[in-house]
Image 1 (cartoon, rainbow, N blue to C red):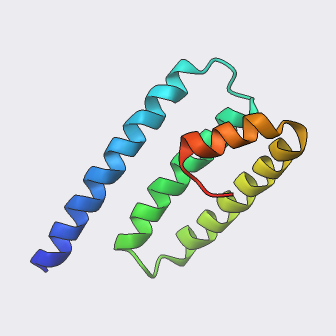
Image 2 (image 1 turned 120 degrees about the vertical axis):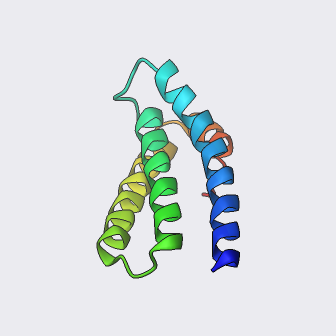
Image 3 (image 1 turned 30 degrees about the vertical axis):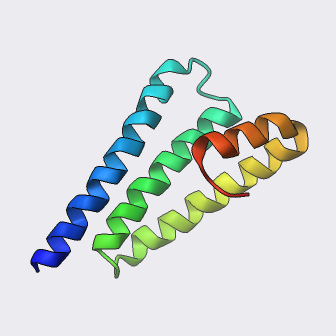
Length: 99
């Protein structure tokens, strides 16, 4: 039980540092309808759900929600890669997600 608590704390600390960066950027952005902002907010939700699912492995509704958000983000990234490859590459590198 103590080992799980230690793992939880390390996961939460890493997660909180990543989320704080994303939250600051969300507040700076003015164009909330842009593809970049939508991908940023989906990435934020994905990271939150991933942390939740590390603790609650059998939460199947959250797993379904995560898959839906991943699909939406994938489609937005696909659209962005077709329209503007430079912005797509910059966003992928900045968020630290793979293609």
